[in-house]
Amino acid sequence: MEPEADPSDLSEHDDFDHEELRVFWDLARYHAKLNAAPTYFGPTTLESVPPPAWAFGDSAEESDAFVETVLDGESGSTTAASSDYDGDLPEVGVLSILCDGSGKPRALVEVTDVAVSADVVVESFRVVYQP
Image 1 (tube, rainbow, N blue to C red):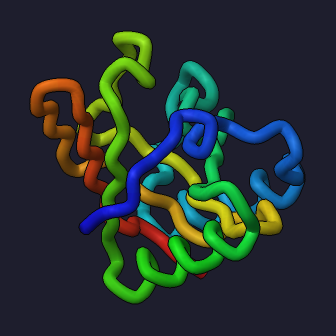
Image 2: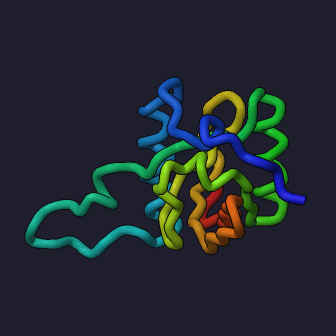
Image 3: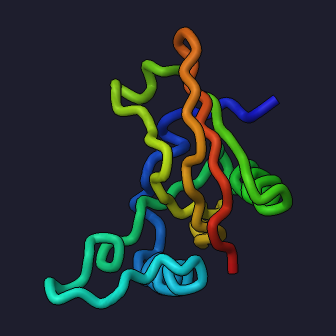
């Protein structure tokens, strides 16, 4: 059974170290081969703005355990009530940075499937990069 998510658990956290996220994003883009070819119009949004960062759980221990489970299987999923998303459901292909309980970036993940059944949303993702 997948963990049930609270949208506050999956939201972007203000206490994450933005410099650490920027460094992680620079490495992740390179290792996951997300670097776009140089363009005449300057950097793309993907190159300039890191994806949202999130940590799962109500405690650092819960977040750390979730991260370890995801990294061991190179994929994961969360479950939440559809009303928690306020009509803004996750989209397949969207990237985000999964952080541990201390806010340290641990993996770049990509949404691979979104299933809605009645009032439940199951979001599946795969690890694209981990240091």
